[in-house]
Amino acid sequence: MGKGTGYRAQGSGYRVQGLSLRPVPCILCRNTLPLQMIINAEGDRVMSDLRVISGKVEDASATTAANGDNSIPRGEETRIIASIAEHMAAVMRELNLDLEDPNYAETPERIAKMYLEMFHGLREGAEPKITTFPNDEGYHHMVIEKEIPFYSMCAHHFVPFYGHAHIAYIPESTIVGLSKLPRILEFYAKRPQLQERLTEQVAEFLWSSLEPKGVMVVIEARHLCVEMRGVKKAGALTTTSALRGCFADHMVREGFLALLSRQAAW
Ligand SMILES: [Zn+2]
Image 1 (cartoon, protein in one colour):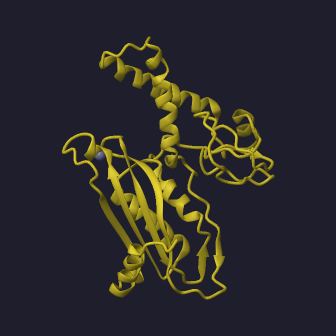
Image 2 (cartoon, helix red, strand yellow):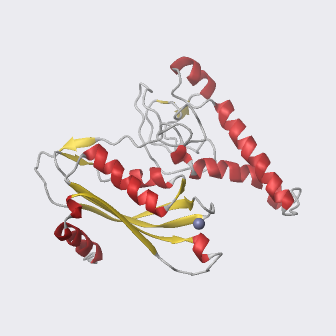
Image 3 (cartoon, helix red, strand yellow):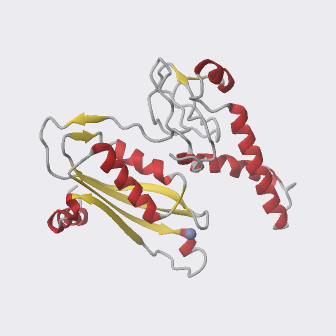
């Protein structure tokens, strides 16, 4: 990721030691989140996001001292949260909201923590590390992952847009674990986004990291900035698509779209 795209210039995650399958609360939002990534015992693998799996998360300052620049100093995290919260409180005061009200009292900080969670795809080093496998079977047909749900935030209004992505690729010499496709989508969704750009970024990531014969991504989404405000078109669905390689071929593309419209048999 280029400089200036993230809210953090350096640092890429929490260092975690040991292996454990016990989900523990997210450091920032305190919610217990689904298992996301296993960190090896050497601790030299960095978390791809804020979801912490191990039973032990090192103190961030100790981590920084011991392991160089691979971690986020906790003090920096705290500073960002405090700064966002301060600005959020100013917005609320402009709206004549009573910050003494128990319902609002912790809202600025809650929003700050939520932003860090929802925008964690901006973090330097948060890119999914995808493991590829040799295509030993010589499979050269379409691999499709349909109806992958996602939630993102519209870059123009900072309100959600959400829906489903359908991702297809035709392998060349490498294949990718299917669970990685949702993770790639999520990584790019967790930032202020445009649906068009999200679609392109997922396609480009697969295109450049897998070097397949072709890749195509279709995203269908509802935008709350369209439904709640402005033209107020409830239920409107926006569809975008991006393709690379052999999906430029009409027949290949039609094959994908035909499979997309097929209902599952169970
Ligand atoms: Zn919008």
